[in-house]
Image (cartoon, rainbow, N blue to C red; front, side, top):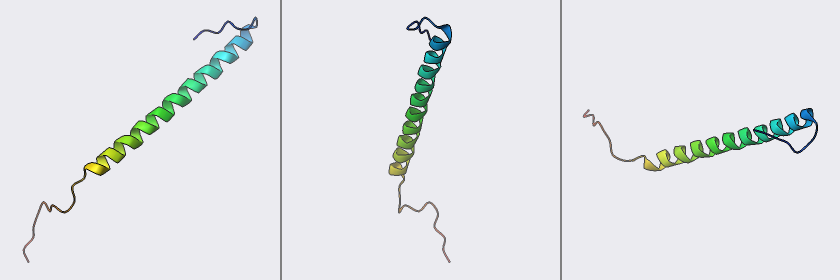
Length: 57
């Protein structure tokens, strides 16, 4: 990433670090949202009431 808004190299570095932090936060929230969506989809696919084994007593 490149920042050339300021004359100061240190300020440009700080700007880039802020942008990277924002991108990482966005990526993490997107990953969390995808994970929750996948979990919900798997929950909806569960078949209930169809026993696999039957035991006779």
